[in-house]
Length: 391
Image (cartoon, rainbow, N blue to C red):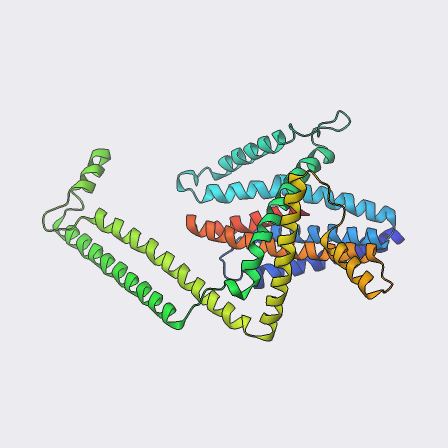
């Protein structure tokens, strides 16, 4: 009976986590992105739900909530599901959407997606060769074999995110690093964007007029076919008509420029909103927290460098040391060991969350650079993969 009650609690919490992940995805994280694939939203929400459930089981283990056998059963079940998602499902769909963006491979995207997934599995499996992972006691596709390789990638990502968060934290929280943006700057950039759009429209009108003139003269039907005909159409143009290929190249360049100007305009608007937000009471509060986390991150970088250079093993973290100094100075009774672990756990969690947010922004800019109508799907799946690996 206790197992059924424990299972109902876990299932209810998973449903709540799934719903929260879905709402967080739709209304906060990717509200400005075009993600139409429901399978991507489901994968993200399921990964979010199982990651939160495993975190919940760790807390239950510390607090002694639920029966130990129930915790073990749900831990193993959640571990199997999360491994299935991270190793098989998410990499396959990432490859599928990447192949879908390539027109030449669009008709055989399923085949090339399988080839990409097999390539991922090869490197994923070869990742375990330098480490003492292989054991004759476990099978090839056992949980131990998979979790060990996922653990190696997860620890590496954790280290990268910690470094990225330590460097990115001051630029994220402190208003000191905000550049001064005025309405004049935004208006000037918008004027450039409108001028570029007008040039694009003008050149497209010229192309349309030229095509209509060529069609009326019968030049469209007399075009030579084949490879040499294509070369000739590029290098020559009919008398009295314009070279459509050159105009098209100019249009493509102007469209790329307009896209960059639009992104820069959006960035200026976001910076202006951050400046206005930093002047509010809540913004000043977060600015104060920014100084605190910046000092904490700088201290961690400094101590990590000292430990690496002098081959030292750190025994006391800054939180524990700070609490010990405060308790000794005030002369109060306080369980330093217990509370320092929880406070350090919360601080590291906050830094990891902000690091993932900063990494997401960086990934978004990268995928904007390579521009694709389905790049947002790849971003979501990469975020789900990172979220699951960090878990």
